[in-house]
Image (cartoon, rainbow, N blue to C red; front, side, top):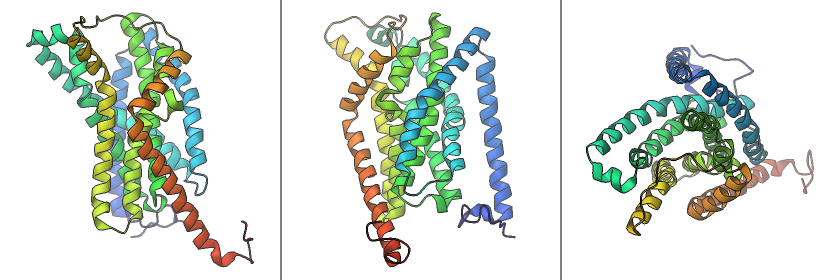
Length: 342
């Protein structure tokens, strides 16, 4: 049996969701995934004190305000072929709730394993300080677990809604949206965790850092690279690029994330080599949003320059491709419904 309705015929063109049996199986799997995500986040929120939960909700509201800027940029980049607004929201919410829920258990378990290992090797703690387990776990667990969880959202959109995913620009948009959703939720969570640990909510430090480059760095950049690579695989006619591009894109996303998370470890090791004592476990400095925004923007531009160049090239080439397709498709309409200039 083929499912058909004028309102979503185009959206589901070529989609496995057009077949009722397959649609039921996929929907059931997605409902299980949603239930799992709900339980993970419910457990997380239930474990917060009431004052910590209040800080978290306020931080989430502030994160929504900051996220409006990069969302507007992505909406502008998508101006030539608007994606369905529901897909915009679905991509963002996948990153915010599904990807975070999938990554959280893996990160927690891996951190516990590393923490136990550090406890058995006191020389590591003497070298790196009280945050040794975090420094060692963060560059390994989070990049792999989080980038795979976010990439699954991009792949799901490609598989289920193939008609809405047809070029590199689409991949950039969907990947960046999922990354923004992840950053939106994680920024608020880290503010709440900072408050729970030190009694002061680090709004300026977290939002200034996580929305540096107007929110287009960090998770949006990492997953945007993977989305661009998947879009390139769709556009190209070379079979070897179709196979290698998504793999290379995921590897680059994980590598960029690893570099980001390894910075505290690299700084500590450099200090140890210079004879400096390891950093103590102290409250973060009370810095404002603007100071962190400017500082982290400049830092990201330097450290992630190769990745930004890759993304800039992808945005430029996708725009060239879109304009060429538009010209070719409208060529026969010149003099009839449109002018040469149009």
